[in-house]
Length: 208
Image 1: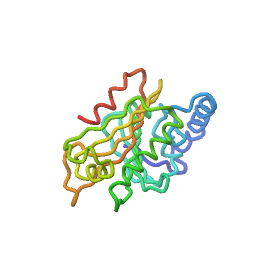
Image 2: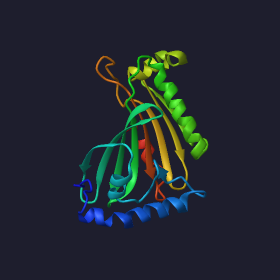
Image 3: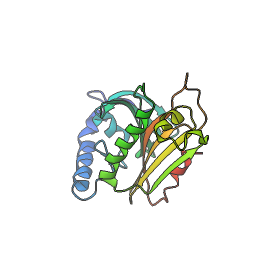
Image 4: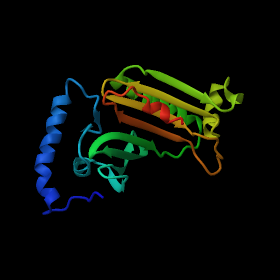
């Protein structure tokens, strides 16, 4: 289990070396390839660098096997309350996910926020490589102004995928099964995955 660094311990004494590595990798990426950077971090960093540099509020950690763990933070992204999760494999950053936790009074605003997120991703990654809508009930299909209600009831899922040589990004809105809107809410999240030469099959697993 990871621990927050405290002054005087071994972790703190190692901080300058880790920080130097962090800054070196950011400098190498800046100006030629920003694809591996999320909130200022690059793929492959150890958990200690995230713990020492993430500007959000640390809320917890989860150990999921030797060298595999998750760190969780709270922050506001474009004014929306969000939980950020960092996944580590063999103590190296390999995936991150941002969960939007905004409270919606108009269901259609979820789709508007998904489009806003996607526009920002286009600026960085270019046009999406895949855009998918999965309908579990077609009654609202021909009424775009009602798609927000279809999302809310779990009748529609939307996925937009961006990809380059290092990173796959999946913006997801919906639920994997039909919802009771009185007690449940659909998810709006963005997942960043380090590809390492993979085919990008990870994004399809979000629908399984």
